[in-house]
Length: 333
Length: 296
Image (cartoon, rainbow over the protein chains, first blue to last red):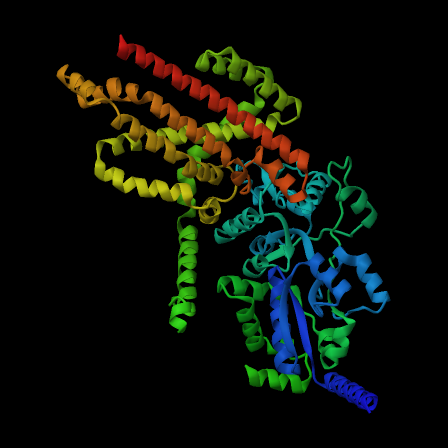
């Protein structure tokens, strides 16, 4: 008797679970989204949270994180379920292994341009001197990019002390023969120093040449043009360009950093309806830069910026979602 | 009960508008007046460049000899002189000579600017209680405000490099010399001043021949503190592109190069100890002079 009741209970529980699964496949369960500690990732995490909650009925929650800890936790514990902006170069091998085992799924390439690094000049300088296309062109004109402490020299603003880009920019400076061309390599000390030097140059329309990267708020606020750094030669890069004190550096370009959304296999089960969205959405760096600049100009939080995006960039996100989801997101706004 | 747990803060939108307005106003102001401000600081910039070039381009034996001689004449102590020699030789041997020269250069110019500005302010403060009560809170702000807070606007105005670095250092390092000049002059005995008046000295003579010489040991203590604080700010200054011992420290922090950080940190400490001991010994010698004058 007792046994029978127990069995019946078990069947009932199993039935319930099966039912729940069926519901989950159509609707959406509890999901956690990694909100990384840099602005562009925080923004897309907030946008994902809004679209998944309002458009697909998920119960989405943000979890703060950073590349390595978040990836490790996703890999080992299956949590958080979704990393909207994962810079895969840092985790290439373990990610490939996890994908091969079916524990993780690589979804959309969220930044279609990837992370871009290189030497940039302000747009007004590029417009006034359309012949400057490459670092070599720029280095031929020290008068356009005066050094802060010596007007007779030109300046290449280097990446902050201790960052890897300090070494690469230093080697490229050597490879282009910057010193012989009357340039000096200016150490900006910190990202605040680097940003400050761009802001100062831009507010007064002075020349500026140096290392920067995208997507960033600075490039959204101050329109800059990336110089053509040339092809990326991986072998030369690994053996010389990225090595401190390389004896004979050659001209080399930065590789595009690939940035993808990554989800756990759990997510695909729990939020199957949203998989289409996660696998299609992707935006360009110019869009991200503009949003980040809006965010910093208005001293807005990621949540406010996400609202601003949903309200004003319907043409961008409208293409990411199904029509039903679009209607419910718009209703929620 | 929400009013009890949540402080009745300013409305968020209004607060944001306020911050935006101030930021925007400042940006417009830099666009308008940046060049003028830069022109004002041009002489200091030239002085900084000149002093760095001088220390870097002079052959090292001359600089080393000069530093050792200064240490000897200021302290008259062979112990301090020997310690100075050994420290500088070690710094050179571990390939930190150029960066140490850059650091000493900005420290010397900052100390010079601090003395030129700080001494008159300190003297004026000692003459007027009203001025003292006005300046003291300003000095408190200068010493406690976190550096990067005022470095952001300074970098917007003057760019990166030596001049904003010098400003950061002077703002942090000038308070002790002002405070101690003020204190030293106020501590001069009333009787001595009465004697000076009795001999018919003018206020200027009284200041120059009586008050400042008697306050000199205290003022030297202020200069000593100013030098120490200038060196303490080397790492912060390097965050806005000032070359010197701070840069390798930053590099070491970012990459966890333990030894690199330790070497350069110790070089800063070494320079600090040299300047501290030498200027203290000099101050003590001044004091012992004045005591002989007093006592006998």
